Image (tube, rainbow, N blue to C red; front, side, top):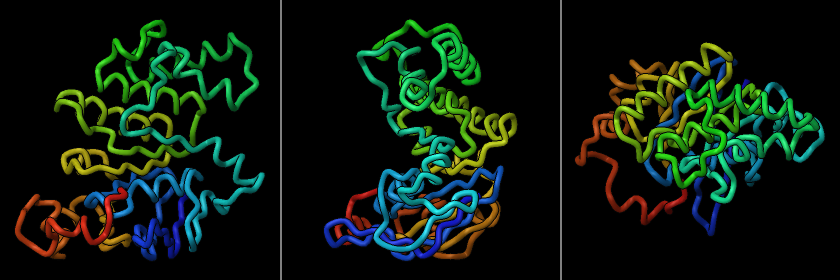
Length: 255
């Protein structure tokens, strides 16, 4: 479903993606781990067509990611769940969820309401259309961000740190949602996370980014038991090892 080949992206002479290669099968949940600055979020934005890489290729369902009419049709079926939810504070929940329908479809008002209600029910938040973002918890904002994506009936969902800044109970609820979207809707997903509990729970396969490249790719068990010193240090959360605190100074802060 997703094929990234030899991808490069530089910001202010900092090589964020440095010959990145990644493959994701249809219906698979691929978890991507790695330190801040490894290129994870830049990869997601490149897949969504928000950023254009300097070189390399991305193909989604066999269609090249480029500013073409063919990709614009594919792009409508790619949903990006932003880390902070990215809700509009002046719009209520129903308007936030239905915003994408106003922008990208010609559905009637009644059809949009039906889609919004269904999407909110999928994430366990039915009946809160009139609430405002200021009334919501962090976990609710993340689930509403997912509901907005679900309104477009996506084939691919990209999650950027879905369990960051939430308590363990809420994190578990979000993890279950990610699994449910795969099992019920058969979507293909990429989940970017630093949370190893989330990674092991939702992943069909995992890849670790380091210095803009994939240094390990395999099943959750293969990553957990990897003998690669960088992978082992990261997944075990150890201060001692080849990963050092000054790397962010050398390789930049772009996620």
